[in-house]
Image (tube, rainbow, N blue to C red; front, top):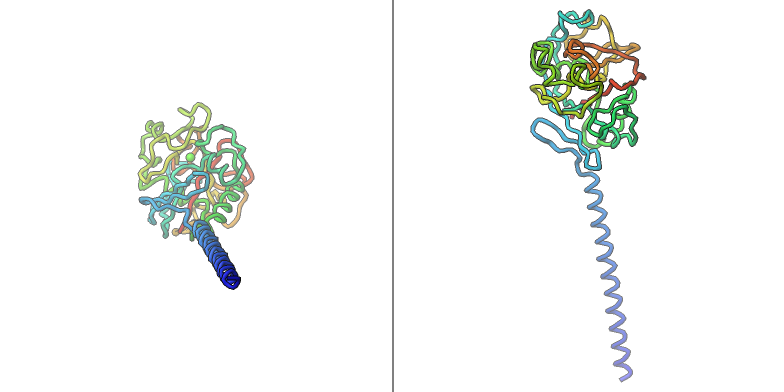
Length: 285
Ligand SMILES: [Ca+2]
């Protein structure tokens, strides 16, 4: 009888040991699976491919959409414009790229940079009072965030910007020649009431880009060169090798129609920031 008790106790101990080992194994396996899932989620792409555009998930439900711009050629400059817009010359952009559908908003800026110092309030208003250098910090953070996605963000060159603003049009505006139509496409001196407005409220151009004319002036990558058009390379011009001022394009809420043309060239030192200046980002993939 005593022997039976020992046998029963021994069997029970072996069963409990087996159960412990089994549970331990399940637990290890479970943790491992959860860990693999977390890794997989972390590596999961944060880019959504839409029809001719890319949508980047910046976090907290905030998205950044860039529109596909085809490679191609156009006539850059305006013979009716200011001296620095001449001569009109043929430029070829040899590679397609993506360009922000909208100016970078204050919500996007705050999500990426963590703080905001724009003058005009409004999450969907374009970020303003940012210098060229601030824009580079924003772009560096984007490139860090999407480093594993094969994407490179940058400010557009002024050739890329003008090409995208024209969207195939040859007149002074992306929508044609008639400046009386500018109110349909832009916030500028005549209708902006002295402030920026939420992005995307006006009509887009033929390539689906909003606020290329007006709202905020947009920083471009290039150094400014007054005579650059006289010596510009015909393919993928990127501005002078050095300079003191960076390019801005498109005019702003405070500019008249003439200064919101596709070809108008502004320039300021890269550290300069007031409430007319913002930007949109470009990328290649
Ligand atoms: Ca603009």
